[in-house]
Length: 200
Ligand SMILES: [Fe+2]
Image (cartoon, rainbow, N blue to C red; front, top):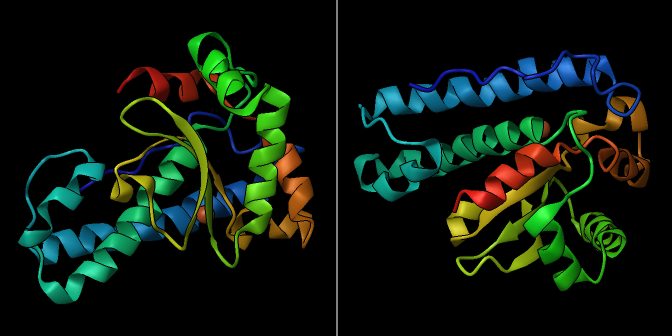
């Protein structure tokens, strides 16, 4: 059984970029539903290993074949949301150090990276997420994944994730997806993103 990861900031911290109502609904309803569903599936399949959530995918043989699709969907819902909420905040919204160097090496500059990230996110069809990921050699790339897939399924480590499901932005931004993306770059918590970069 996995416990709720609480927000490490108040519901109104991200105003005016992410409004209080959207954030509260997103965390307390959408995320918690995925977590409850995940725990139900684990219970039903008598899964008792205490492993980090992203390692559950190495133990799929412990689950009934008919539950795997549902397990992966809800597991992704939990992993993606926990990463998303924790890579937002007001701590530090510019990368520095080794990560900044690697971003500049890969994309030309931090500004170019932001532009490419937004372009990629705008190309996502339907619901899903846009990520900055790294492979085992710490090479960076920007990818889109549909629904609740997550980069660990493809042996990639997520550094930054943006929720592109409509529930993440629609109440405030309606169909102005590009404005939502602009706002995200004002509230990224690079202290958290750098931690992910450093712990390989
Ligand atoms: Fe979401």
